Image (cartoon, rainbow, N blue to C red; front, side, top):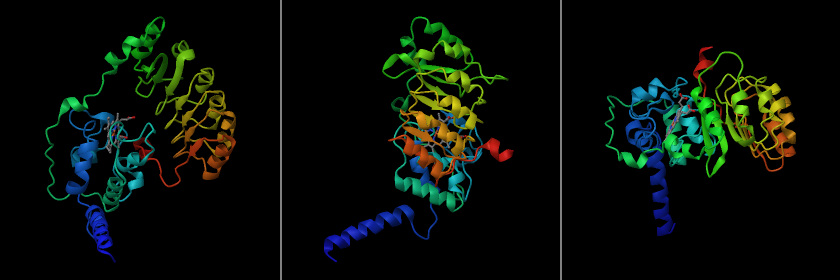
Length: 319
Ligand code: HEC
């Protein structure tokens, strides 16, 4: 072995030993907490509690978020604190939602830490570092984008927003809209897309994730032909819904994670030639069903995530 190789090997082993430390448990305080602080606290601490989740203390991590537990000791693939960091970066659920993602070695430390039982070390109490706040200040959408909404749309948008529906113009194009029902007030009964219908010729992005939308409700959506992006993840929609979705000729991106769609339903999408990405983790679609759709749509990526399972949600766990 040359001197160079010896040095290279030493460095290589050094990196492995210091990051994964064989035979020694991953140390939360030393190996996990620092990257959580750098990459997650800006949205998950005392000041910003996105997803009703705090990651800046063991208590916060153990308390979980909006959907319940985020950490299942021993089971990284059921722990959204790990799993969401491994999603593709353009997935709407990918964490961190903004800023630098976890490196491969940070991901693997987090995974091993969870596999080993996710202990925090005795008496671990984290004292947060003072932050440079301005640097991380997020743009306020109400001042940033509102001014672009003009004409008839102003009133329609106001009406939608009254029920908690989020409406924004799409980056760089003030005549196109993106709408999310995810945080809207829950109304009993069927979804009312009537008001939204007034925007249908400029609606390109629609998020219905985690709402109570039904397959039937989606028959209205089928007439919103401009939609390019549709997120139906974690809803109860099944194969019936895909008949309606199949009418969205401009659809590029479809998220069906944690729905009950099957290979049979997926066949209905074969005519959507614009489709680029379909996410199916946690659905009943098989790898071969996904492959079949990929074949009929040249260039599309149909993702069933054979290795990754969707995080278990509180609702499912308790039922
Ligand atoms: C720029 C802001 C931002 C950053 C940075 C960020 N998150 Fe989030 N996070 C969010 C938002 C917003 C939600 C709620 C999303 C939703 O409900 O759809 C969320 C939700 C979550 C949830 C789900 C909570 C639940 O109950 O299901 C987990 C887990 C999570 N984040 C982990 C992380 C981790 C780990 C990091 C760092 C690697 C991180 N986040 C960084 C904004 C952020």
